[in-house]
Length: 122
Image 1 (cartoon, rainbow, N blue to C red):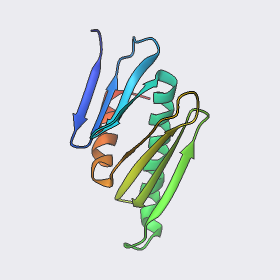
Image 2 (cartoon, rainbow, N blue to C red; image 1 turned 180 degrees about the horizontal axis):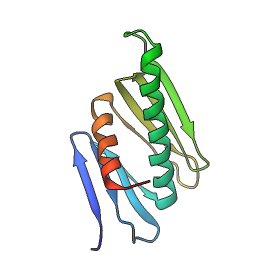
Image 3 (cartoon, helix red, strand yellow; image 1 turned 90 degrees about the horizontal axis):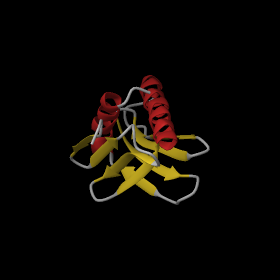
């Protein structure tokens, strides 16, 4: 099976198989999953990192009860975070080829982000 890695928790899962041709990654929620190409997964990780950093920076300028939404996009996919800087949901839409959409509730996004950082250096 090679270097296939799958990490999962309550409400999320993420997988990476670097030697795979075609679909090298998997992202999913409680009852859904989407296979991603390596390029899609790289964009997913990069955009997720940008949005997580943006939410951290926004925490200093917002009142405690203020909710915000931020989005980031590449040619391959679109991501949006929505909620409070310390607890926000994540939404994914693929822009090219197949049409897929997924989302993770605020309760699981932090754990998903930590797993992605351990799974793959990007």
